[in-house]
Length: 491
Ligand SMILES: Nc1ncnc2c1ncn2[C@@H]1O[C@H](COP(=O)(O)OP(=O)(O)OP(=O)(O)O)[C@@H](O)[C@H]1O
Ligand SMILES: C[C@@](O)(CCOP(=O)(O)O)CC(=O)O
Image (cartoon, rainbow, N blue to C red; front, side):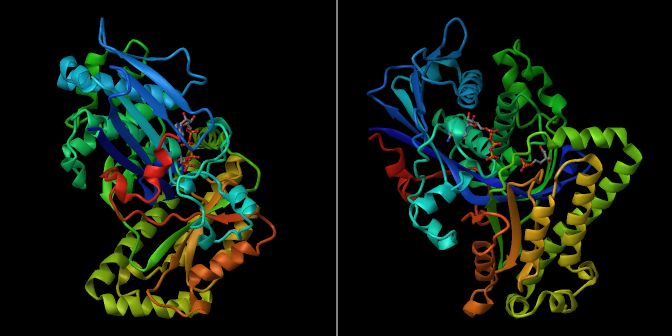
């Protein structure tokens, strides 16, 4: 019998806290997406002992073979016949198997590899831009059209040429891959991943965070891996010193268990519960303005260092607005819990109001903490992020995005939006009211789709992602995920 393990991990959208979250003093608000990466591991009799074959069937020439050696020390070697390298996958295999050997003993892991592993990795279509596909199918750029595309569809390009949408493909990939191997090798249990927080989930986090830093060659804030492991939350980063010793080439496998242990207090990241309020929906768009923004972070941090007084004031102000947004959203969730009927009718009513009326209307503002409605807070965050961009000379919310976001925010039922994460030209997020029943002409989602599909100044294409209702990394059943079995079958 073929033993199969399937583990998925969600993508992310940082709706507040870009740049600030690099500093442990400032939390970021990260929403995890329904779009996920899936790793499927099958122990296969047909594959030789101690071999691992990794396939990414959505890409051209994307199969990599590896051998696991146990003597003189555990090592994972790429086959010389591989047509390309995949540093992310290779490091994930090396470090996860080394940790497994340390925690369970070489004999157990050797036993598990009596039959080689076939590992297939696929990401939901949202991780890669689908505008070319929609065009080739002659379909308009709408949410409905996206459902017409085969799940996990082939991109018809090499991995290095794919147009990503910014949902954090590498973090979701590393998290699903390392956690799937941990489960398949019984280092962590399937049942522990059914709990929102557990020692095993934290073990999975520490390993994924470390492997991702190593593969990227830098220690970022880590909110993307954290969202892939824990789902939506308010994230405060860890001190990079925790993995410093493991980042060098001389790091020994014997150091892995203690450094990556869930009990290691030096992992001082903080996670506070967060989810979007009921009857609201996050909507994302891939904005093809033809520009990439890789060096934004370096420039912003340089400006902050050189202008510490001004930056301090800006960071503090932004943090206040960010926290106010997060707390208001959480408070709305509580109001819904307390009196769902009233809450639902208020959301529905808001959808019929023009934005200026929404600001004046306050049935959801039942106490002091909601005195400042969300719209002004979101506007203030955008304004301060633009200021950060202007001062440091980088296009965090470029004028093209400002015009688009303003057009979206002026639609009835749109709570607000922004440029996710580091900003730039690539994407936008919006939060819209999403009542259970709504006349078609009053549905904020439809208004937005209409606006985007007729927008001429930029090429805006929606993503199908919503907020993930499941908390982070999870074990799946192969047959439960539409299209997965087909996508990973060897043709
Ligand atoms: N489907 C896949 N199969 C195998 N490896 C993948 C896959 N998707 C991504 N990778 C690995 O991740 C690397 C891309 O990492 P990179 O840091 O550029 O992405 P990212 O910034 O997380 O993407 P995003 O724009 O989605 O946020 C690739 O070079 C590859 O090694
Ligand atoms: C700028 C930064 O705060 C966010 C980057 O987010 P994104 O990858 O652009 O979604 C960097 C980081 O947190 O690592």
